Amino acid sequence: MKQVNLEELFAEARKAADFAYAPYSKFRVGAALLADDGTVITGCNVENRSFGLTICAERSAVVKAVSGGHRSFKALAVSTPDSEAPVGPCGACRQVLSEFMEPSSPVLFAGSGNEKVETTLGILYPFDSLHDLGS
Ligand code: THU
Image 1 (cartoon, rainbow, N blue to C red):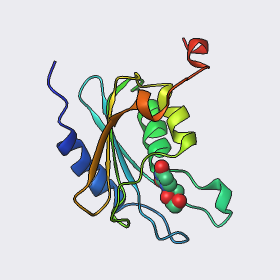
Image 2: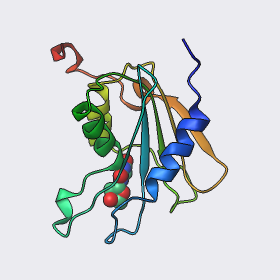
Image 3: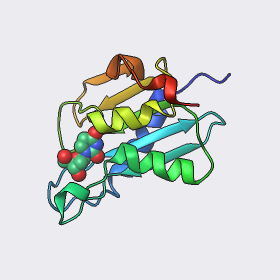
């Protein structure tokens, strides 16, 4: 299997952040998922004036991917260019990602600074008690 190139995936996430619709928070987020067949699917945050309806970049990427026929992802990258420090996926996104990624799947996230966090979904979302309900 081709080694996952997280830096390339992060570059795609960074580009996706420029599509963010974030007039309220002014905080752009881009996400890039690497599907099992090598396809990269990106997403960005899409806010709403009814603030609670905001969709995060990670879930936007998942919905786009699954509706395009991709159900299994081997890596995720998240870019938050409006923060210097890395910002990881929120709790809701971690739950949704766990439906389609293995605990061992690599996750890379970074802001505009040099620091990059490379971890796994299992570290971000341990004790996934509902996992066995999945098919
Ligand atoms: N946001 C994401 O897109 N992903 C995250 O994991 C954290 C937060 C978005 C939601 C909102 O549009 C903005 O960032 C500020 O919270």
